[in-house]
Length: 126
Image (cartoon, rainbow, N blue to C red; front, side, top):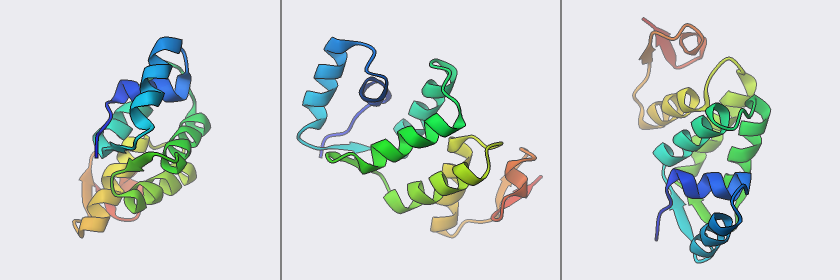
């Protein structure tokens, strides 16, 4: 299966460049894979460059996960990360994803200096 880069997902979500939206839609129409890294980068871009808030970012991740032709890497870990992200607005999506991937792999506790992440079950504040 083909894979997509961050900017392809950003175009699909923001729809801010018609030519690139058309190209992105054409590329993913035959199916495309979304890696954890690309998903994490996408959430960062949506917040940092587009100013989207917590709820809008959560909605964007949900839209990508339910997209008919996209396959998100390790969807169950991403779903758990999204659930954690929705419950803990003080966390970034990437923090939630790192924790849930570690949890699924059996590598907890996740050591972190982040005081908010350190409060989450499965993480340990250093």
